[in-house]
Image (cartoon, rainbow, N blue to C red; front, top):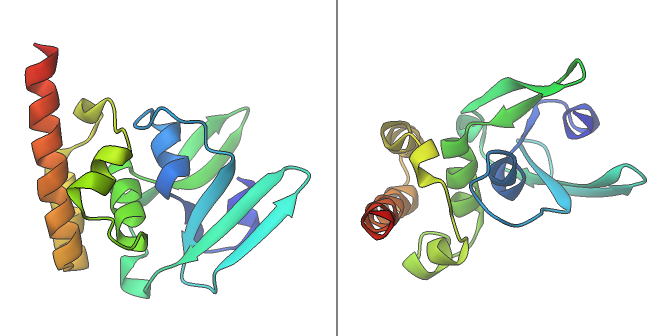
Length: 145
């Protein structure tokens, strides 16, 4: 909620949203948001907030999310948070990078939506990443049986 107020027209994404959805095991000390504004970082008594720049056409795939206590914030969907992270990370589409994320609960990802978001971005990098995530999800299914 604070991140949304610091930079209007931004939404929480990347590791922050992935942790919110339980898709990565780590605690994330910095709230990362995506915006079309200039990149910035604020360290405040209420926490650290980082804002990453994306092109206007990539500013989608988020929703107003209930945070409890009558608070709401714009947060990327799980699929868009993963793709934002991969898009913004040099080499983010490499199988090694995706494995290093230690993704968990991949059954919470809608693979059709993941593909749709990659298609909307029209990014070969994101298409390669979707393939890696699909393979990882399939391999995890077999190891949990």
